Image (cartoon, rainbow, N blue to C red; front, side, top):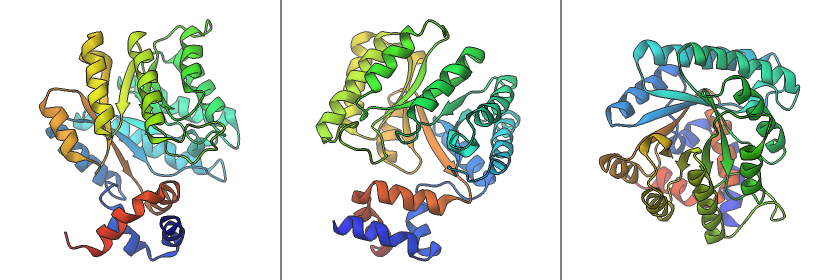
Length: 303
């Protein structure tokens, strides 16, 4: 309860104060910051996926700026030979305002990605967007079969069924490509698993289904238990490294990340950047009030 209270207050605190915590998890406000960090991560043996911060636009005209930034990211990756792709939220491109405009905006970005033999990942947002984002993914992968993927959240009751439905969809025969994460949005217990081990168990159930059915999986977790269990699954099923990768957030559990790279496992780091870092950070705090203790340490404990 105290954590929730503090998380509720933080959005009203000075940005400079919140930045003390946020800067560890965001590469910077500018694209140059994200490119610098991408080069550094590539040198460490990691590929990257860049996320331009921002979501839930109020006017369709706002999507143009985001589209321009994403296209520039793809072009810079190509010109600088950076090993990376992009992740985007459909709500940034008008999903909640006009689904066709959203589709058209993301399709424009995908055409550039295809030109440079790159890839985009459609992030999964809260449960109000799930059906529309799965439909968007299916529509785009029918046109661009090897250049688009989707995020799925293991804590949702529906996820296993969604995977099976996409596997058996007779209208789309192109390969499936997922990032599997636990899930971050606050959802009702009627549609989302709440228990800590319960979410882990369903994560592994989803992962096993994907690996057994030739689906490319981004194993997105910082949970050492899940990492260890995923490695056991990969080894048991003899999954080649071309069919999976581990994924972690920028600034989170770098020791575990480096140990996996050292052991030869493919690793991708999710690198957010942009001027909307404040709303991104404070919203994450509201969704994950247990992070407040880490923030207080960052604010008040030396080092």
